Amino acid sequence: MGPGTAWYLSVAGFLFAVGSLGVLIRRNPLIVLLSLEIMLNGANLALITFARHLDSGDGQIFALAVMAVAASEVVVGLGLIVALNRKRVPLDVDRLSSLRG
Amino acid sequence: MIPRPHIDWFALAPMNALLAVSAIALLSAVLVPRPWRKGVASAFCALGYTVALGFAVALYVRSAHPHGVVADVFRRDRLTELAGIIVAGSGLLATAISYRERWREDHVGEYYALLAAAGGGMLFFVGANNLMTLFLALEWFSICLYVLCAIDRDRLGGLEAALKYLVIGGFGSAVLLFGSALVYGATGAIDFPGIAAAGRQHDALLLFGLAMIVAGLGFKASAAPFHMWTPDVYEGAPTPVTAFMAAATKTVALVVTLRLLITAFSADAHVWTVALAAIAVCSLVIGNFAALAQRGVKRMLAYSSISHAGFMLIPIAADSALGARALLYYLVPYTAMSLGSFAVVAARERELGVPVTFENMAGFGWERPLLGISMWAFMLGFAGFPLTGGFVGKFYAFAAAYRHGWTWLVIVGVLATLVSLYYYLGLIRAMFMRRSEDLQLAPIGGSPPRDALLQGAVFACLIVTVGSFFAVQPLIDLAKHASSSLPF
Image (cartoon, rainbow over all chains, first blue to last red; front, top):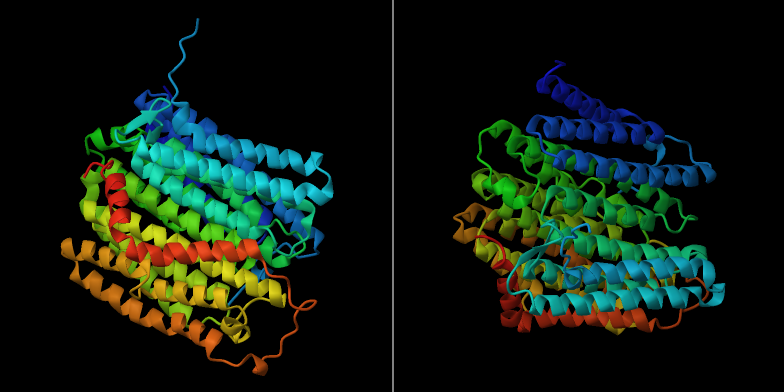
């Protein structure tokens, strides 16, 4: 008998909170992408926890699909960072400020 | 023999057509020689959108009885198809506007492939009938749009816009996903009817999830306070992409919000009507006041689109069949006005080679009368003047709020409209009442040739904007049939 549903949910919520804090306060776009992944994984853990708790397969299939989506999203993000890096832009989201008004 | 589910391929035909042309356009990037590549890719993209439009119209006519498709993950009804018609029309016009965009053309095949694929994702999104389809379709078109923003790798603005869009869009999607997980936990279902049918015991869990889903959709619809990406992304993205985003993304995000809240969460209406009204007021205030301060036309239009997200959330917040009709009617002139106004900005941008501001729009109305008069009509339409569909749309939206008993929301909306007159009329003044001799222009390589495709697209938008005022009854009937597929 392992830890209960509430524990898994707490971990999921914690991961989501850590991820969102990372997106909001970190300045390196690579770390920001990493934090986005942590948010999605927190949501995945919540989905799987509920799937086990409710004994239904929907949440597990949902989580599998989310993994594929998260991977493709981060691929696009990394591609953008490489393209920005080729233009010799410093990797710092605070200094990406040519658009403002 | 494995039993196979019955699949209604006709209902999936619009998306499949767009996916097919997306694949062909992507192959043309490799197989077609460079001089013909743009022509072939754009022709296929336009063909795909035309076929999708045709299928959507046929499906609208033949979907009087709504039903689920592919194990009920997707809904075939008139709401899906009406939104599909709007998206496919926007995509067709965006293809025409893109054709003569000045950019380095080594990724033109990929551009049209992504444009078609984004449309396919949106068509799936509007029909989503469970939270998984909703999330997958949302990411499908969002990822296409992130790449489209950065398609011109030489422009730092485009790359920056794409990264901002990706980070904030990804944040919004993650919030939506966590909300979906909580709703799933509270109700044990991910399909909309199942969520509606589940008892409401875990109220805190469910309401928290609902709030996160509404916030996630708010990011996509660029409603305040989830709007912070909008001005930067609209400014930095290539203008045809901005036009498509402003028209189609907003349409699908609002239609899905309507469907989700009405079909899955009608039991919690006392909560989300108030939340949506608050978001609407926030968008109206922030959008209109921030737009007053803008000098760049694209940024002004971006803030105007935030304020219109507010206007169009009012009828959803009214939670009535009248509200649904008002939203679906309003979307028709709204998409035409956004596409048209960004197309006119694109035309001026191609003439000047610099970002378009209020100052360098001077005299444009006299130089290009068709575009000038169209822009006039679009601005008056945004402001809600009679003789344009914007007037009827706002009238219906306010009527829905009034019927719901929210006179204060109507008053906020009317005040916001009055504020918006300043910058909409300011642009008309800049185009027609400032002399272009005062302007220090550095045209890039002389006057560019007349762009028939862009002018045709703008003219089509003008006809829809003005026509939707005169053809109110047929359009309201369309919207009425579409909204009748929702359980009010």
